[in-house]
Length: 392
Image (tube, rainbow, N blue to C red; front, side):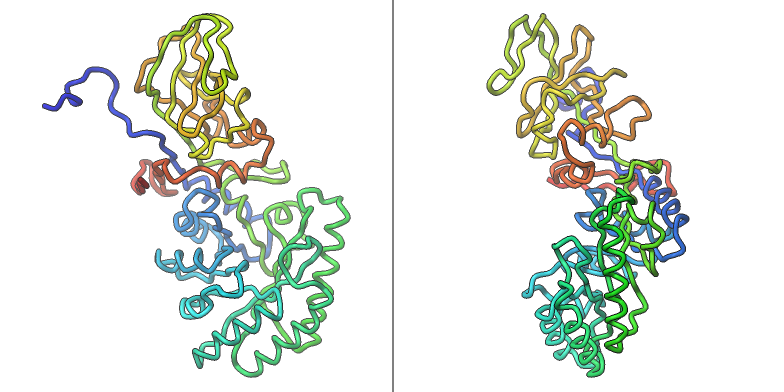
């Protein structure tokens, strides 16, 4: 028998663990699909908002979504490599991206400029009989991605010429609303008007795109006028409601084992710079995760974890690999498990709590959880984790 096997105490743990409950993704997809008559494009960029792109994609497609959306071609190709055959759109690529590979994998491409159209046409020219499926992207008021209105008519005419030449099929027109979480904001009305104008210009150029999409999660929930044929839902799939109006389910639970416990005297400093000193004698627990794993460093002094059924404050600075938790006089032992964040049903901190502590948005919290954390996916039709992906 090994020394470790013979050691008394709690069962061995394996470091921080992130459990992803895909039944939450399933429930959220159904709820959002019920809010619209449009088709649902499941946006699984940034590794499915940190939840696992392929797992979120499969779950969403099984519960009401009909297509997928990502930013880069690399993300789209990864979905294809994972066996996803549903339509997938990639909408943010530099001019030297792997357009040939995208066309070979039947990936739809957003086209935000004449320069992008030209490189897509060149890629399609090298693969006769395989026209590129493109979505023309109009800037509807965010001054980010998408063609400026002044360039839009020429882009539509050029796309129509490429379509007549058999090199592309304009299957979509897309835009984005910058203030959809506040329906009263005037920029939403401007965005809807500009999108309607963009569609008129496209039709006047001879284009007949069957897919028209402007709304993301917030507009899907609050602005039926922006739904058109398709809505793009990403954050909502994983339980993030930018509008604060809808009870979506969070599916993430992040836990970490207690590495060690020590008793310190009153006045003992903790961590770099002694940013916190113990006001009284207390016990401190060490957890093996930090800002390299996605815990926001700026949350120090406000963050909490759940340990032995109680919220415990994180004290001192959040370090790259570790945080310290004040236990008071509770007899916590090494090997016990702290819940860093979860759905909140047991009183644990939520993603929303961490966002408040870090003065950011939940999107940043979930997409920032690092690859050192072991992932376990609990599938929507299962009661025990079966899909395990460990990342060294």
